Length: 349
Image 1 (cartoon, rainbow, N blue to C red):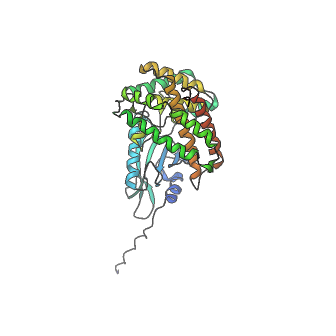
Image 2 (cartoon, helix red, strand yellow):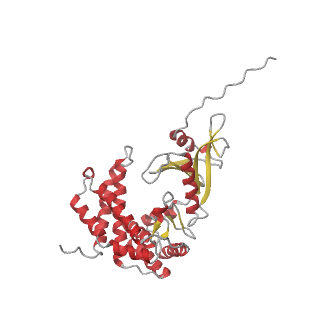
Image 3 (tube, rainbow, N blue to C red):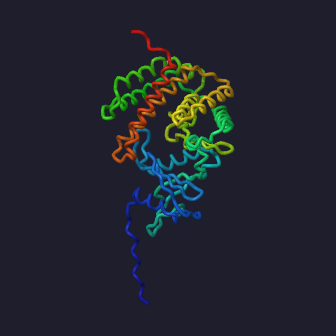
């Protein structure tokens, strides 16, 4: 029998993000018995809810805060996300998985072929146990909030103080407020510039002294960085997911900055009592009594930042639900104005 000519290798092709999303949206992509996959897109990732697991694929996009175009960078970010989130959700973050290309040209999870991307693998949490959903349903109890406070207190107690100079700590807020100003006063978004400028100026008027004192006292730690209701699970014990993994500088926070942020978001969702209880419990347990103007500053600053981030969605050519971002920014601006009433009155000129 004559020798058969070698079979040609399948032509190489570039695997696009669309290819990866299409593959990961199919139940047969996963090793478990998965009946259907729910696919969700966020600003920085694609998320696939597959049976008892969640798989998160980071977008290969360059942002101001990080450049995700490199496969090596995306792998590092995935591993950092798992490492950091295990601090507050050890049992939820299961590890990372490679998305590989077989010699036959097929995508496969953990297939041992040529790695095309990396995914964070998580245990799926019941939706009704997330704090934002529980607030909407009116099912949150004071005992659950007390357990969240206990978990956060334990977390903050275990963190070493970050050695950051008072001037450098203040400078971070000054830079961010300039970014806030650039977006919030952009005439394309239609916010009244005089109102925005008044809020921004009021927020920063007495900030340096307040912030420098916190840094001098060693109150700054490497915290969560994005403490929002949708990241808090009312399980037993509570777990907190989705910390900010891509910037250590943005995780260098005052615990009461994070708590004021969470309090503000709970108030926006209609449950202001949650933040009050959390701050009161954590202040007592941490033996730290931040002054009311400091909490008001953190609240107003975070509201300005969230208003900016809401409007920033409109700068994307493919922004989803564009109609919601300007009203949301206006709501945050109103919250910043409300918080400003607890700050010192403007100086007389």
